Image 1 (cartoon, rainbow, N blue to C red):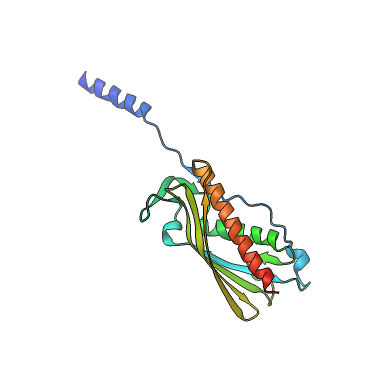
Image 2: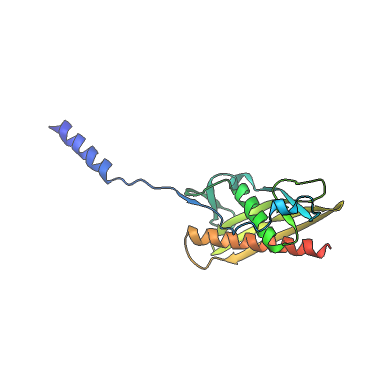
Length: 188
């Protein structure tokens, strides 16, 4: 009798337990407007986005949230759909392509003559005070010159939740791409 009650209780508990489902996020980006086939051999200026690096704690699957001035939490169930560094590189290429319509922006070198862009992201997280942080530095190799700039954006997250966090992070990344594009335009 006791054995039957214990088994029944275990089955009841198992039926009542809920599983936490993972939620996956992708940075939103529009379509890439640059066309490789039209640029090949035309002498169109090219920017190779060589790499976008992130710190080790951001390189995992979980979104990062800063809970105090010194404490960071990595989400266990709110995850990036693909590696963050890849998403940042792909959306940077898309955003720069839109901001620099006279240039070919690509993730691989196409030809011998191109500028090379590397970006090191040091902050890409939500924060305890309702702000979102996008920070780091970029390095552009342009005609034998090295141009290096830092970026440090703090944007308000206007709604609660991870969806709003990802949208605000994407907005900050888009603004960073625009800053890079403005610097590229001023070189000529």
